[in-house]
Image (cartoon, rainbow, N blue to C red; front, top):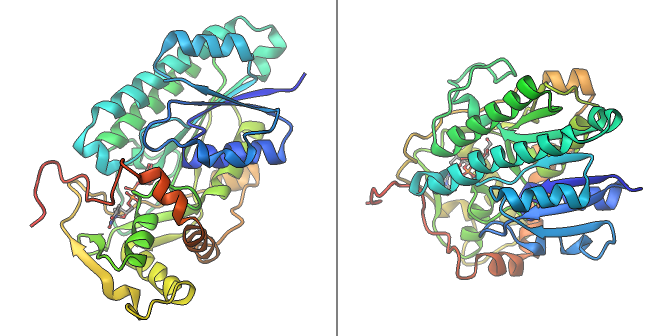
Amino acid sequence: MKQVILVTGGAGFIGSALVRRLIRRTGYTVVNVDKLTYAGNLSTVAPVADDPRYHFERVDIADAKAVARLFATYRPCAVMHLAAESHVDRSIDGPAAFIHTNILGTYTLLEAARHYWEGLDAAGRAAFRFLHVSTDEVYGMLGPEGYFTEETPYRPSSPYSASKASSDHLARAWHHTYGLPVLVTNCSNNYGPYQYPEKLIPVVILNAIQRKPIPVYGRGENVRDWLYVDDHVDALLTVLEHGTPGETYNVGGRSERRNIDVVRAICALLDELAPDPGVPRHEDLITFVQDRPGHDFRYAIDPAKIERELGWRPAETFETGLRKTVQWYLDHLDWCREVTDGKYDLRRLGLAGVTND
Ligand code: DAU
């Protein structure tokens, strides 16, 4: 019998990259469990949706009955938990959905997994894995020096990161208390195809090609550590198959960049790939806007543990990954229109009711 993996959030950006990879390059059967919020779109998995090993279930992970039914029906050997509200700016405007999905949803999933796991035979219990996928934002922010390691204390600063920190603690507690074979990964900023056009990189591309101002928060000095989404997916599969239950693995590509440098790099690529006589230099569209409230200054992952213990390394550099990503968005403007239509118009979010004057 084929081994089954439940992927939560499989219609989102990272989840869908994982689903596509599992179907195309492994023998696992995949159950994509997704609530289909604004950021979850089945078009992201359309390329693999006809495969007999692919199943879709529209379920809210905080719905205990529905989640229990999934375990009973599909009898998975693993859960890869990526379902989350993920956008920091939205968490500033409306934290409730973040508490519901990220905290309550994770709790509900852990409980259902535990009950199912306790009913397995010894071999099934030993082989079962629950991979909880999280973020480096749980560690809070760094100054100009230093890196986040697996030992860095948690100091989340936004409603989003506080909700993810909470879910990480729950996941670890279910391992510590009940013995559920939980693994946790904390990853840096992802980018690549199918990222919902509210995050920095697609926002910059879409504004620039429409000759609109490119909004850079503050002075653009904040630093993020960038990883191409397929490299993250590769790390998740590596951790699932070779990681030690109870352990945490930080995932990052040693690609720190100041936001302003990321934005300028995108503009230079657009000058080359989408020349516009009306805007000879896309970077002339850069506009500094009011900063994000509580904006974390710098994130940077030390990935030494996953490199050393599991042999994982990213395949893309930031330059190769960014070029692919810009080209992908230029080739998929219809997709961008389709997933934002009536839902999001690139308007500024996350000012917590403060007007941008
Ligand atoms: O570090 C991992 C995290 O990265 C993930 O856990 C989050 O789910 C993901 O959203 C991301 O969080 P960020 O807040 O870093 O991503 P975002 O794309 O919103 O912003 C990246 C940086 O760019 C941040 O310093 C804010 C800035 N920014 C963002 C937007 C949307 C701008 O300057 N202008 C913008 O329009």
